Length: 88
Image (tube, rainbow, N blue to C red; front, side):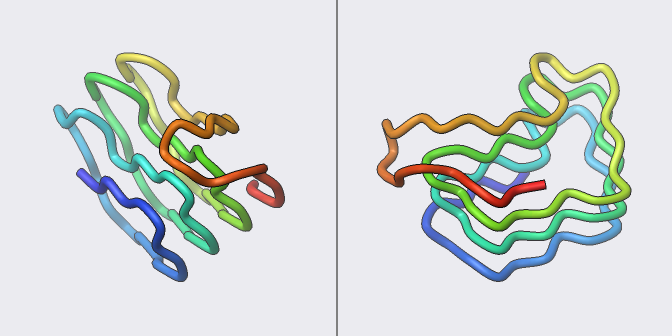
């Protein structure tokens, strides 16, 4: 649904994602907020933040029946970026 790279300061609020690849995939994204989300029956992760994504917040959100991880944070560097920190 949302596939971002190298962006910052975006809020995704009050969204229901169902039968999508994922709700959010972010590479090197900073200060993102995802709140009040419902994630159902995705083919991959519900939310995935990687490649140096920092200072992100996922709040009051739930996921079920995701094809892989419901919520994933990992510090890959294949799409640029560097260390990850301060994501909740």
